[in-house]
Length: 381
Ligand code: SF4
Image (cartoon, rainbow, N blue to C red; front, side):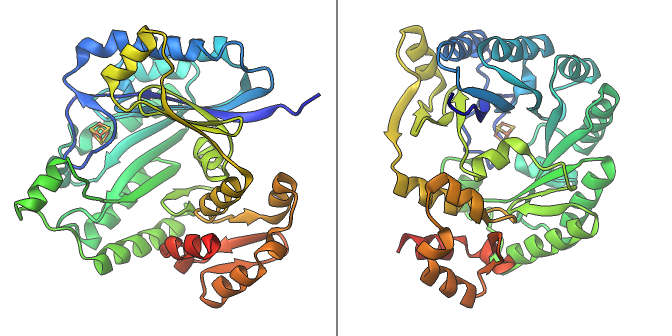
């Protein structure tokens, strides 16, 4: 009998109250009229997997967006039920949902917890109201405080917050306050991303008009390293370039991506990596709905991965993780020794202080975290 694979399942819910000034994600504001047609399409796409799942078990589910909590709690629970009807879900599956402060009250959070969601990922971004306003966020600090307190009362113990550093004019004291207050509020996990100014956003427009200046790289790196050291002191270990958690509270869904495991993504812009096929769904929400309504596949591209690509991807994703690449797992997946095949490259990267090695694993150093591209290029060569 073939081995039962563990996979992750991602559902994309692309509705937002307003578009944040830095956001270029696949999300739309002011399209409430499309909520029901989108939901129908999503259920339709999920249904297409019905006959295709004998050899796998879903160990993590992640509903992201957008702002999934703009939907009623009952609807989100029904969507989760549809996942249960469609796939075999592991008993102890991690089931996460993203939530923006100001979009989920106590009742909604209780409905979600009762319905089986067991991990909440809250978009905090910054502690200071002036930064939240500048970012175009709909919420203020007190909304985050309410959300986390209601979440705990509803029974959520696995709570993450997303935060951003490198904000225009952000000082170390402000970044430190954001991290300290988030941890004091009771999160078990933090995702800390550096602000990137992307084309098509309000921030990009402001930058073109010279109303906004990107933080100098040196200052941005300073905030990153100081922040990582502070979180370490507070007990949250860095387990990925941008992710920190108390031991045992790492995000299993994202770990599966970084370990180059298989996953299925449903919804506009969602990606899948399943049975050696990488697929990307159409980005646009309306096109997504139309495709599903007319019986077309949601994916607009699909490519088969060969072993060489899979090896490279496994290395690149794995070096984002503190745990690095486990040599035995690599050998059993690909049938050859990582240390032997890439000995010269490994020695060079060790010599440059980018990797460390022991009998079990190859791991990135703190410098290696900073210089990911150099590691990637060395292995590509
Ligand atoms: S809430 Fe998130 S997805 Fe929505 S606009 Fe803001 S950053 Fe983008």
